[in-house]
Image 1 (cartoon, rainbow, N blue to C red):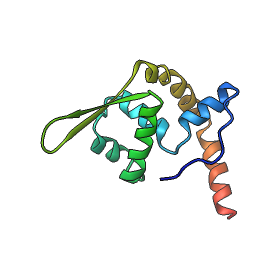
Image 2: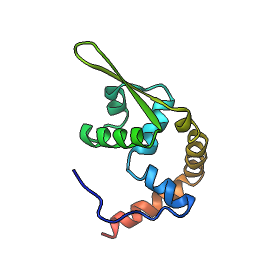
Image 3: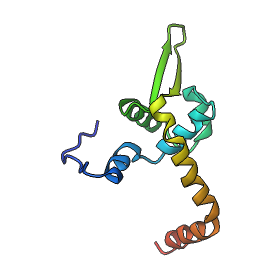
Image 4: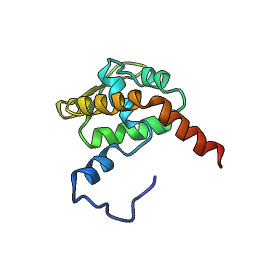
Length: 120
């Protein structure tokens, strides 16, 4: 597994939030868990572009940052469920504001992203 060689700069809130939420799917994972999608297979269906491996890695990182908790039920086959911790729930209003900003600027952002992709 990838091991970080440079210690991250953790001197301000933006550095800290970047360290905790950096990852293509983490914000969406938090949002979907908040909406009630708790099983890994449900999360995989909500984010079909992500591989199971990447989702598992990002879920483990969210666990390590105490944003989600994982419960493994002792049944065969194993049943796993995730839920937001109280700490993780404090991020939902922030994610909501970011999502609303994206909705408000949807056309502009989409055009900028497509323009950048076309110029490659």
